[in-house]
Structure formats: structure tokens, C-alpha cells
Image 1 (cartoon, rainbow, N blue to C red):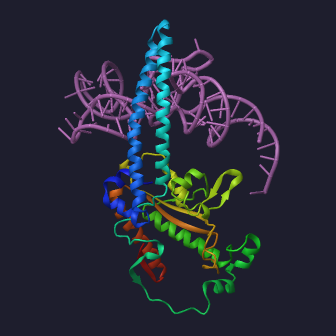
Image 2 (image 1 turned 180 degrees about the vertical axis):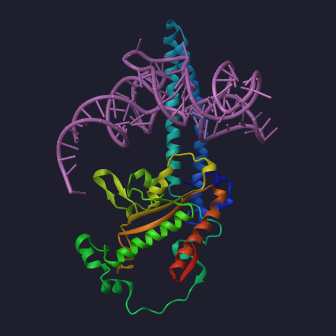
Image 3 (image 1 turned 45 degrees about the horizontal axis):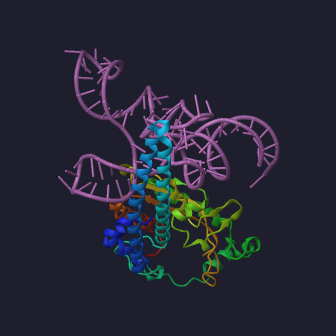
Length: 315
RNA sequence: GGAGAGGUGGCCGAGCCAGGUUGAAGGCGCUCCCCUGCUAAGGGAGUAAGGGUCGAAAGGCUCUUCGUGGGUUCAAAUCCCACCCUCUCCGCCA
């Protein structure tokens, strides 16, 4: 969701959007279109007010006075209809432009895409290369089976078997418990969602080719539980006092991984289906920094407790 | 999948068949005031949300919203169409 008022008035907000790839021209065009839209809105509403008043007047008028009044009202309605067409075009233009604007990033975030991160901290040493990579190791232990996955479902699908399954379930349970202790409500959401949800969560139209579609039912498989979690309060006005709302979603995730041929083709990296625990918070903007810090702290604690080396990056 | 009933304000619930003075009766809840010596009862007033615009603010003007989206009409909670959801019965079922 893009806050047009903030985009207009808050330079930091605008800078955040530009950092994530929105061109200055696009933003200017969007703001200009919205300004035109609002001017037209006033115009339409004035006509509509007249039209409403005329209709009420007819309701109160004597029978013999009505025909003339109805004629006048009809004419007014013509004018209104034309104004509405112009207004709707303006609204459509704003809608189209706004969907092209990425969510503004925080001012501390480096410009650019995923690759343009900066390393904030390195924790733990870098272990030497193992005798087998994760794919070879998983295969030899009987924990992952890509050949079987490919036979049953195609490339980039894998079976997880035996102890690896128990490990996944244990990790999920352990993590969920930790998050519940930190004030998160655990959620297992639907993974098939309507198109509206994908648009609202910001994945459509830009990432549509990454999403599996169930055409017969007009449903889409989510690539992350973020989508149905975002849908939990869709269309609601949340009372500021109820914030923050913290959810820990667990779901299978489905990704087409279109355009990633040749990358991470082995093992269980970048597969079409995987399971994930996701933290998701609804917060007021002034507390979002605090909440983000909380998320980072929890993530660090998880990796620390597991005894794994890691980097903290700003992206 | 088939048949039927229904979705109204914070909640319950009228209105819809016979379109207009209904942004919506009534009740509950909530807020304020009055009354009252004992956590109760009674009386009065108020009480939806969002957008645009003007304003320093208080607030004013205005639009939208009765599941959602269209349509008919000068006028729609009320009429028409499509969709979504809930409930009941039947069918089906790994």
C-alpha cells in the first residue's frame, strides 16, 4: 500500500520508494495524476450533491410539479455522467501507476535490489568446505530425494524423508514456541488465495509469473504466508490501541522460480515448494523501527541458539 | 453438486412484497448529565465509519457506505443481473 499523502509531503518516504527502483518521473506522474484526480473528484461531488438535492425535491413535490422537475434532473444527470467518466479515467490512471511503485524502504537501506546489501555484522567463523554439499549429503543420508521429486512432480521438487522430516517438524515447533513466548499468535493460514489478496499483498501484477495459478477455481498458491497473513485484517480499520498485532505464520510456500534456471539447481534450495515460519507484524508507522529491531533480535536469537554462524545484512 | 433461507450501524433486530421526508425504527451496550445513602433501579441527552474540501483549531460543507460488483430510475437498504459468504435439507466423499 502506497501512502500518496506521505509520498507528496514526506521527502523520506519518497526517497525510500526511489531507493527501491521507482523512478522520479513515475512518482511525479503519479502525484500529478492524483492531484488531477482529486480536483475532478470535487467537481463530480458538487454535481452529485445537486443531483441528490434535485431527487429529494422531487420526492417532496406535488404530483403536478414533478414532470418538469424530473426533466431538469435528467439533464443534470447527463452532465454528471460525463463528469464521472472523466473522473473514472483519472482514477484508473492513478491505480495503474500506483501499482508500479514499490514499498518505500527505510532511509538506512542501501539503494538497489537484493544483491546490493551491506554487511552489518558477521557472527561466527566461516567453516571449511564440507566433503559433500548439502545436496550430496542429504542424498547420501536418505534425507532428500530429488530424483523421486522430479519423477513425481518435475524438476525442483524434492522429497524430504526420515530424520530430516523429524528435524523440520522439531525446528518448526521449537521456533513457534519461541515466538509465542515473544507475543506472537501462531497461525496456519490458507495457502490458496484469491487474486485480490495477491494484489493487496503487493505480489500482483509485478510477480505474477512467479505464482502458481489454479485456473479452474481462480485461486493462487501463495509463495509465502505473508499473503494470507496480510489478508487477516484486510479492509479493517485497526484501533491504534490494539497495535502491534504480531503473527507467526507457518505454511507451505509455492514458487515457480521462473527465470532462475541454472541457479541453485541442486538439493532443496530454490525448490518449488517448501515450508516456512514467517513473522508478520501490524504496527503503527512510528513504532515500525522498534518492531523491526525486535524481529532482528529474535532472528539472531534463533540462529545463535542453533549455534550457526551468520551475517546480519541491511538490504 | 441439487433445493431452500439469509447477509442491515459496536451487538441484536425492523424496514424490502406496494422505490422518495430512512444514514436507517426499536432494543442492548457505551458516554455525559440529573435523581438516589448502600455494586441496583429511574429520568434526560448523545452515540457508525471512511474520503474530498475549507479552517490554526473547534468545526463547516460535501460525497460514499445497508455482503461485493454492475444495472434500471430524477430517486434504490427496497426493483433487476452476476458474484462472495453463512445456515438448513439432500447427494457425494481419499
